[in-house]
Image (cartoon, rainbow, N blue to C red; front, side, top):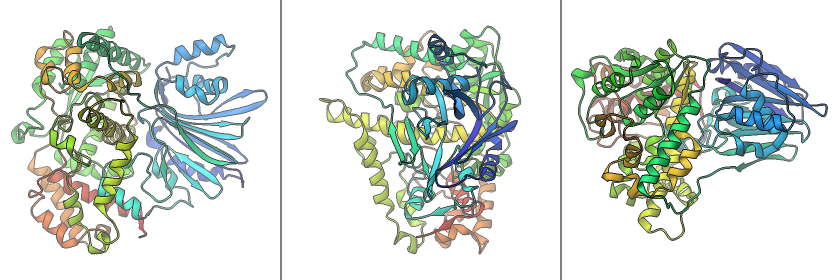
Length: 613
């Protein structure tokens, strides 16, 4: 199986000769996504670029890939991996197609050539790709169902530009980093999340998950090709648990196919332990597992309702039970702070502070041993693992339950900004857009409908923020992190499991725990959920405070074009200890809030952002 860890770019303009040099400069911005090889395709109105990390089939997987039919050249650039490559290949062979390589790239291109736009319905995988269709004189773009792989675009003059990351679009000489009211509202009201389809900078957009886009001489249009469908769940608890187990095992086993060294991230929680146990049962030989910890964390760890215990004892239990070759990567606090800037560069936006920088470092360490790792992300979003799924005040609240900081956000802003932006209204508008889009089940009661809306909200907001982090930080390390819980067959089935069953035994993710009985030790199976580990070390806080103090003292700091210097200085002086609600999620408080604000300043400066209100 070909693993297409890479970056893609392209430019189509029917009104002029497209300059290949511009696309080359754009593509070079994505070298971290694929440092081994680049490739280009250029025709009069079209140019594609591709950065590749070679892992298998060096010749057969070269991109841009071309294939001819009826004398016309179809061209593909592709980032991702298909998990049903052989199934598609066999179906195409029966229709008379032949293949010159073992790569899923060739299978993907010929699937389009055979089935046209409908081929996307047949794909199982994570992907973002572009195909030039010479017959219809059109550019076809597609993105996977849950948005694991990124794809951004901008309509420019009489053409369209696309790329895996925003930085590649900004590398084009005619595309500028401009923030208008809506873009600034994205950062200040919603950050570090963003509206599905929003590129934050003026004129930049994201192709939404589960969407395709077509650009031809008539212009640009998009359509959705997949969504969850609400229907009555009729399976018993036992049948449901069995089906969940089967679907998860199939998803993990599909994603274990690899010609390069592969491992799993293992935190000792239910999600990562389940993936690791399934992998151990499937693979014949011992494989490698990886966990992250922080310098002197045992000394400074603070127990809370969100983070009730540390991971290490649970990891040890799993390693001993499965016999994996385990690596604990222990991060120094200085490095955690030092990588905050790099994390912004890879995300192209202010991010989740040390939640990003620690994962970037973790992927860098893991890359020294394996090229691919399976990760437990997305389980909490689809099974209901977060507190806001069961807390009544969150279900009844009109707004994003992970953003409780709108007052703090507003208070930090300069008067000139608050007069232009309505943070509360922007939050509410974006919230209600998604709520209204939720496919409800006819006849369900108001509580069930509210919970279904909460699941939809998580699928389209909270989960993409974590998937952005996963993709950008792992790609920043030229490393591939796979997410079996995002398999669309599993997501489709779990969507309709009623809450009483999802919460089986009155435990978060209860049905998942029941599905894993006999596969995991009981102390893992019934462990209370604990989020991604963070540091509690005062040295990290001190490093972030020092960075923020330098920003406050610098008269040229861009941050104070939008935030009030005195109010930020006061926040820094108190080390944000007086902030009651996290800025985002469960853990972005105190030093994480200060780090996020410092990231905003760094982003404005590093990306030379123009604020145009």
